[in-house]
Length: 179
Image 1: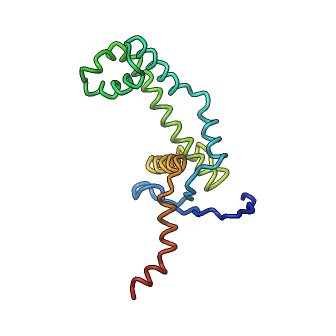
Image 2 (image 1 turned 30 degrees about the vertical axis):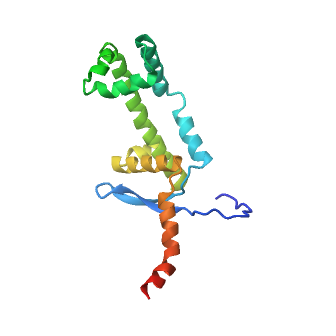
Image 3 (image 1 turned 180 degrees about the vertical axis):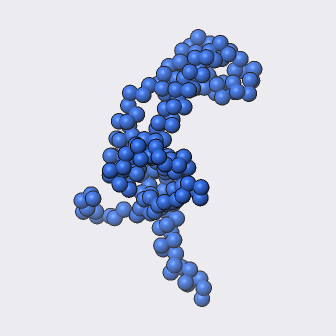
């Protein structure tokens, strides 16, 4: 447990319990803080370090953009249109196998990131002895829910915390409204 700080102004929002999972997978509660602490961010960054999939795709897109006289953002947008076979993305057909290879690597990277993020949250907020093997045994709905929680916390999404804070403050207001 962290040592308390001598706050002059107390933090406005307190952690709340949030449900993760589905009726199919089962549900459990885990703490939502509204942020990731340094240990959580470092754990995920360190675990994903060395995986070159996103950078390799970006390099390939930059190379294609240079060869085709386009901006990398245009190439990325056209890659989205490739599936619908739009006329704007026809030049990408020549790069299709290379892009498919990068797409598969990026998909594997994304799945690895989800597992690492889920493991991190369970290790930091539930059980310090939790490991990747434990996460691998979980239902996909739980892993997906933990991934979404991680992404929300990373984005500092505090909607649920604000709602819980408002709910704590509202019983007096509700009582006054009943009279």
